[in-house]
Amino acid sequence: MADKKIKRRDLKILWSSNSFWAYSGYSVFSHDLITRLHKDGWPVACSDFFGLDGNPIELDGIKHYPKMDDPFGSDALFLHGQDFQANVHMTMQDVWTLNPQFLQQIKCFIPYAPVDKFPVPQPVLDRLKYAYKIITFSKFGEESIMKSGFTSTMIYEGTDVNVFKPMDKQACRKELNLPEGFCFGLIAANKENPPRKGFQEMMDAFKIFYETHKDAYMYFHTQQVAPGNFPIIEYARYLGYADRIFFLNQYKATHNSNSELVAKELNAFDVDFHASQTEGFGLGIIESQAVGTPVIVNRCQSMPELVVENKTGWICETGTPRWTSDGSYVYPADVKSLVEQMEKAYKALHEPNTIAKDAREHVVKNFNIDTIFKEKWLPFFEDLQDEMLPVQIDNVEKKV
Image (cartoon, rainbow, N blue to C red; front, side, top):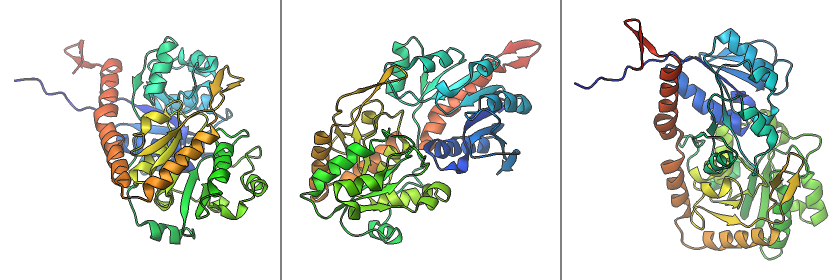
């Protein structure tokens, strides 16, 4: 009789990222993964370098540690890990922000590493040298660090298809006080200028598109607004269509949003506008398709691998790449190509189509968090547990 693998949950995992309630993409995925690990019996805790100050708290049986002095949590990753007696210290954040002085003291540092540029910036590679193992978000990320001399396990981000699901479009628009017409929606952080999320290129394209499509408008949900952000409404006034711009209330967007609200917004859109200049994954791309709303993305980094072109979304070409101070490229979308994709979307959605059905099925098949958790994350942690904490049998180490 074949030996049956014993289900044990001894590996203690500390996860460093944004807090569950911070409403970023990292927050949403951290919640979806860590709550499933906790439910499956793994001892897990979170080091919340963004979203929690002061003292540790416990939420639904999961301990959350606050940020310390380092704004990106390097000290907290190490010291909270010691307090929790973690076997593995994991991060879901830009690794270049981490302090090597702390990383070199951690026995098992495993970054779930966003890679959104090629060549991979040297500060990223410098931190990856301290990793026990590396997990990447996308095929683009996996291939990029492989070309830089590193190997990784690729595990896609996933989404909860029971939260992000089709709803009545008109009811969602009514709740959001949105008008009739053709809606291009954007849900993104607005933290810098020029904007990584491609606001200017998309707004320039909308100006051209609007000249022949007066029923069109744009909707913005821009959480994490920073002082140096891109001035959306001011630019819309300059372009002459400020009356076609709609916003989620900024306080609500920043401090009182959640996945349920975002799912309603995505259902209210005709097209999700997501032509970022750089993107390590783009969780909103799959969340949108999960509700049946197609996406326009940029042909760079991870984005093209998340849609089925001309079936669940459209891909615009890039313009002139811009070399950045970290030694790599970002790719602003080509405005002319963006307009062409907008026209394709408008035409396709005004004809009989199966776009909503195809988009939903694409995500359920490839990006369902429950499937990814079962088929990718559980085997990864079980193998890591056997590697780091082998079972002792008759004073001889054996892996179960």
